[in-house]
Each structure stands twice: as C-alpha cells, then as structure tokens.
Amino acid sequence: MGKYTWKDKVKAIGPGAVITASFIGPGTITVCTKAGAGFGYALLWTVIFATISTIVLQEMAARLGIITQEGLGEAVVKTFDNPILKKLSMVLVGFSIVSGCVAYIAGDLAGTALGLTTMIGGKSNVVAPLMGLIILALVYKGSFKVLEKLLTILVGLMAVIFVTTMIVAKPDLSNIFTGFMPTIPHKSLFTVIAIIGTTIVPYNFFIHAASAKNTWKNADELELSKWDIYFSISMGGLITAAIIITSATLMRGMSIQSAADLSVQLEPLLGK
Image (cartoon, rainbow, N blue to C red):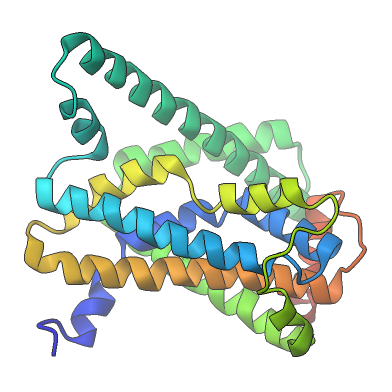
C-alpha cells in the first residue's frame, strides 16, 4: 500500500489542474467543436495520443522541479558551460515563454470577450482589455494557492457539464469506438495538428515545474505529484473527447461561425 491516503491525494490536486485549465481554453473548445462537426468521431484518437503525451511530458517537468527545486528555465541554462551558449539559451527560453504566453493570453481574452459579448452584449475590443486588467489584478494581488483551487473547481465544473451533455446527447457508441483507430480523413491534417498543439503546450512545462517545486519539496512526494498529473490531465482529455463526441452527435455538418455556434452542443443540458 502507498503511504498516502485518498484524502491526501485529493488534497494534492492543484498544479496538474492548473495545466488542465490552461489547455482547455478557447482554442481547444473551438478546434474540437470543429473537429466533431466536420469529421464526426474520426479524430478521437488524437485526443488519446495528445493526453498520454501530455501526461508523460508534464510528469517529467514536475519531477524535475521537485527533485532539483528549480524551474525548467534554470535547468536549461545550467545545461551549458559555455558563457555564450548559456546567455543564448536564456534569451531563447525567455523569448519563447514570453511570446507563447502573449499568444495564449490573447487567445483566452478574445475567447472570453466573445463569450461575454454573446451573452450580455457590448464590444469585444472593450471587454477583452477590461477582463485582462481584472485578471492582472487577481494574479498580482491574489494568492496563487487560491487561484489554483479556483481553477481546480472550474475544471471539475467543465468536466461535469461537458460529460453530462455528452451522455444526454446519446451518441452512437459503435461509431465512437471507430474513432479510436488512427485515421486522417481528407482535409483533416491541420485539425489533427491543432488538437495535439492545443493540448501539448510547451510553456506549460515551465509553469508545471515551477508550481510543483513550490508545492512539494522532496522525492517522497513524487507519488502525490503523479496522482495530481494522472487525474487532472486525464480529466482534461475526457473533457476534450466529450466536446468532440457531443459536437459530432449534435452538430455534424454544421459550419462554425461564432461563439454562439460553439454553444449549440450544450443546449441539451443548459438550454439556449
């Protein structure tokens, strides 16, 4: 038997949930809705591939953070002895993280603005900066642990909503299983790449290494980190698969033009 109880493992959920909340964003929801509407269940195999790959890579990043008590950036820089290569790696890592985060934040704020303006009206170019300022204030003034728990709750809520909607939609189980066989339908290659790319997110490695080292301090706690990763990222994979299955069942052949179109798949559970 392991040294940790189920209660300990439930309490450990946090850093992995932040990663799941990170990759289940507007990009994943849009791409997976289009995948289901355009190709039915055929691309479900990409979710399994991307989820397993993410678990493996994030576990490596978290383990590095816990064992070395350093972030991934420090580990990359320490790999080089040559001063020029060391500085070059610092510039490359710094530029990659900043540009990746800028692109990610822009996508999330655009998605948030689309959702809010669809529900309550207003202009996206006003709502997006306003939400950005609110989030900046939360991150600057708030506790990371509180934000971590909030994101954990939101991931759980998304899982309940999307999985319940998938069940209510009554998909064809026999067709779902055919989607687990790797195939690339005509004109689906970019969608395959997009599903994988919105799940395996490189800057999440840096986030995870940093949050893991702040949460756990020694090798004995690796078991808790692994549980957090396996559970949280599997939940992310389940949500992603549920989006594809639901949109394939309810939206097959539909053209996605707006945020309102994305929400069609939730109508069986939440109404219009």
